[in-house]
Image (cartoon, rainbow, N blue to C red; front, side, top):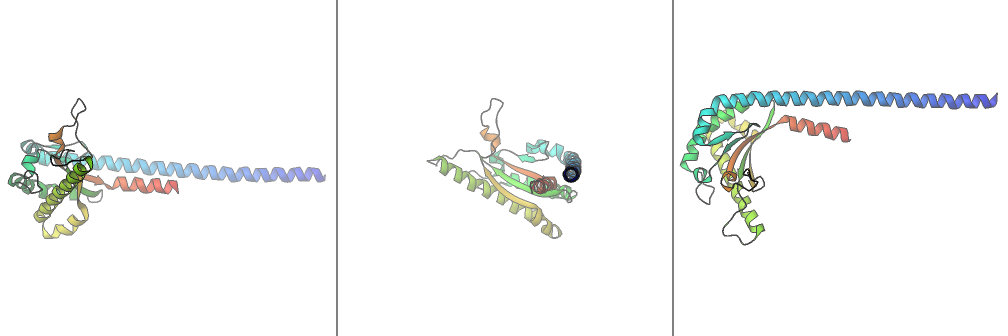
Length: 224
């Protein structure tokens, strides 16, 4: 009888452990399902925002972008090419022609992006160059010179756009708009895989959605 009671106790213990593991498994499955639903919701929101913003930008700028020889990409980045049109040779000074473009472009662009303030986290004004620098004697020197130039150019564009912004809009501008020098970190390539130096020298207006931040927070939560 004693031996039977011992086996019964072990069986009860095993049953209890199985129930605990079952509860843990069910809880984990529920967590995974909830997190999957959260990711799907974030993706749907991102896609809706990107599509609506793209349609607004096309409607507002399609004709003018052709005249400026600029481009609206699928990810809603607007790219201004041709450095000789944008900046004075070898400097960060904005040309009169580029200033005229920005006068027409930025106030309207900012108003459009502001419609999506709940979903847009940042506007990045990015300055891009190539790896070339005639007076440099090393790869390090070329890189640093191009980084300084790209940062100076992106900052110059930001300063000019800030001056175009109304007083009421400036607090939001300071929170939303940032300047980034990218040097030659993202060159544009020709079809044969070689660097297109002319098109790589450019200025981009890039929107960053809050979906990126939400997904990062969710990933961090899962890791913990």
